[in-house]
Length: 145
Image 1 (cartoon, helix red, strand yellow):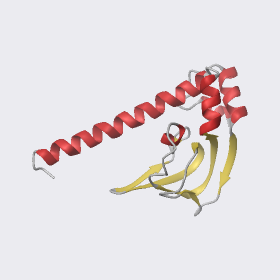
Image 2 (spheres, one colour; image 1 turned 120 degrees about the vertical axis):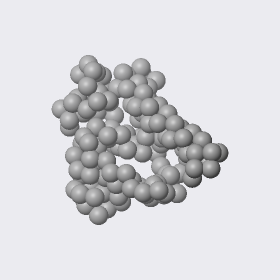
Image 3 (cartoon, one colour; image 1 turned 90 degrees about the horizontal axis):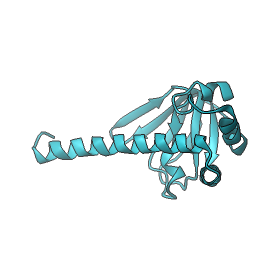
Image 4 (cartoon, one colour; image 1 turned 60 degrees about the vertical axis):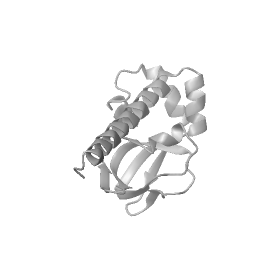
């Protein structure tokens, strides 16, 4: 698990002790193909980092497939107690690292650099979503959609 995370884009530059501290806070979870990781509308307080396998996220306009080790899944639950926004299904047997909002908060308050790296990733994902929305709004305003 540590090697997979260390090789991921999010954690590649972290010192081992910072990653070890984060690993001690969360858990490795094995998921069977066909199972559900999360359901739209359900309360959510756990984010996941994909270690192996494939997870599919259902958006209103289609599917997003996550199969890159190190992919952050359900990222916004670390910052907000809002219900889950999408259905997440396990497309093939998968292994994830789970981290609850409370565990993330403790790591962040302890100034763990791994928590900061996760926060940076969440920020980048949210900015990308805002840019996509802005593009759609501009297209709507110009009558192209």
